[in-house]
Length: 397
Ligand code: CTP
Image (cartoon, rainbow, N blue to C red; front, top):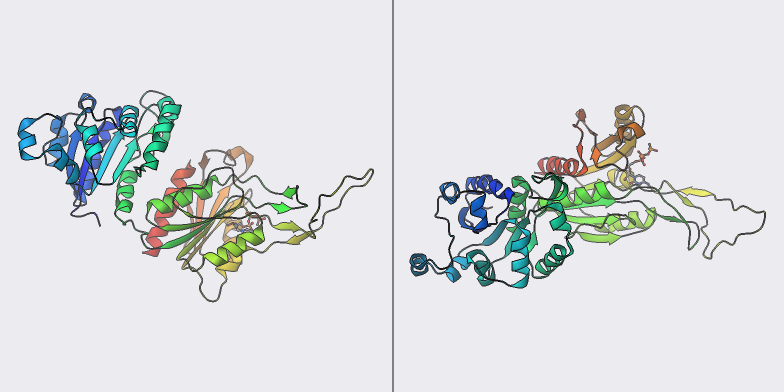
């Protein structure tokens, strides 16, 4: 998919610039030609010699280099590529791009190009969160620039948070996706996420504590692998990912209807925490408080969306994945849940309070498949999503 493409790689001046060496290697492994451009600051972090040795091409550094102007003007240089990739994109470079400054070769190329531009930002967490950077980011996205990352994590400056350059495989996946590739290109995948709200009356409802974080991370990971993602979400805390086909619902019955409307899909991942019951005869008007009287609620069982889809006779997705949150006998309970519901895989997690998983940033997962139980090491929820998406891609291809 990438073979034969040409990328103009603009390397900004940040500590993460060293990752570009690996990025160039991996791009070239895939048959991509890399034309490197370095800002002056980038030369403080990696040498032009290493960059040109790995790229197999001279590094372009100077705007006013007469020999090169004669051979290849900077306008032409900006047009030779199929994609302009800026990595790392520093706060300074993003600000210049957003405001149309063109004081050096890199920024002039970015102004002159008629080629799609992708940036992989990397900077200190406070610089990333600064209102100016976030403003510039919004401007760049509005201009059609694709943004990869940044990731959360420990940073070279000793702080923790968003600002780390995306890992090389993530940048590669984004590039593949840009060219319409990725292992899930052309595949439709459904993801349910978040809680459902079951009304008691127009102002009150029954719900649960799901934030939607894991479902959102899974949708993002699937998008990165090139899938078309239909994202059916209840009222979650975290914002839905950009780039999905978004279906917002409130109740379990609405979620089932949205899921059925989204079929057929190649795979479906049911990460939503669906309320098992709804209030029988929910009132159309607000239930008024009456002295000395307590309302009593009766319940009806909600449809089991996962089981409904997993047990479809016709049009069942090739792969149906459910979740199980367990506090006891995780593997035994999740294994029998897999059979009961008829799904292919169950992602089980141990949510005993002492694990710190519920509401935390990490997850410890056991994947239950037909072959048995597979314990995954404890890792971030994003990493769980990546791994699950990769497994899913392997199973579908
Ligand atoms: N699920 C669903 N529709 C429901 C209930 C659950 O699609 N009405 C899905 C969830 O999205 C999840 C899995 O089924 O993939 C969880 O099953 P569930 O039986 O609710 O398991 P737990 O929440 O783990 O609860 P319990 O232990 O009570 O079975």
